[in-house]
Image (tube, rainbow, N blue to C red; front, side, top):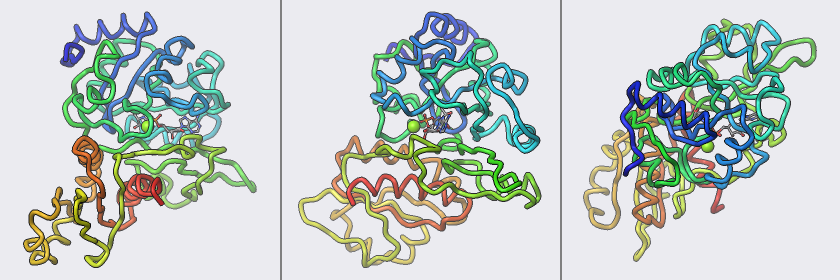
Length: 336
Ligand code: TXA
Ligand code: MG
């Protein structure tokens, strides 16, 4: 693992030189690890798409170190966008803003570009040292779970990139919320194109309920990424709410991802089944953020272990639970 670097000023300076020569490298953010390149360079951006095997009509998010830089790369058109920037950035949110021409059209081939300021200290120090806008999708091969550790990035990309900055486990564990402010029928509305770590409730609270916030229905026009296969573990993912839905199948490797509340309720059953399948995690309803934190790490593990069927418990779809279930459902969709 020659390409794993510790986060320090020397690493950031090396990263700066790499970005300036159109190289691609992975770095931690508070959501997941990103695969970054200079957002002003077509050549650099093309490398990201090639490395990930990503369809080129799926735009990349542009990361900057502070709020002052936003208007160099995009236009803030209204007060609603400004409030989102003031109240939620830096943080796990991406806001679509009118793109300035300086941003590479390979990075983003649509009029609105996603701008994000990560709250993670390493990402901030890196972006500040580098001084360039950095285009970065999740640092996985397209279709796989987003990486939440440097080791997961390595398992996806090996030594095909010159640098992976090791920032330990990602705090949030799921990606940023991608949002757009729409003006329609004489009023502003916020659309959540991709639910993420910032919740619908968080956005509503910024405006004390004065602005409506909606989840966009699967609309590939608005968020091209919705069209593609995602979070695949190789095997099949099934969502369950009751014990009856978990079916044993001989000669298949079956694993269960469930809350400690569910496991406790069905303690006897699971004790009897020991050896038939594996109970992998003890999530809790009390703190859904901890479920988000290790979801993708578990997915990656299941993928590496060659699981045939993964049963994932249905969590309450409120707040962060909505965003978690969005990922789980998309991983389950691929087989239905
Ligand atoms: O937390 C995150 O957002 C991470 C870290 C690295 O910042 N990045 C990330 O990027 O998850 P990616 O490319 O894996 O997912 C970005 C999503 C995709 O679904 C893409 O289609 C959508 O955001 N998106 C990006 N730019 C867009 C744009 N200009 N218009 C509409 N959707 C956009
Ligand atoms: Mg991604």
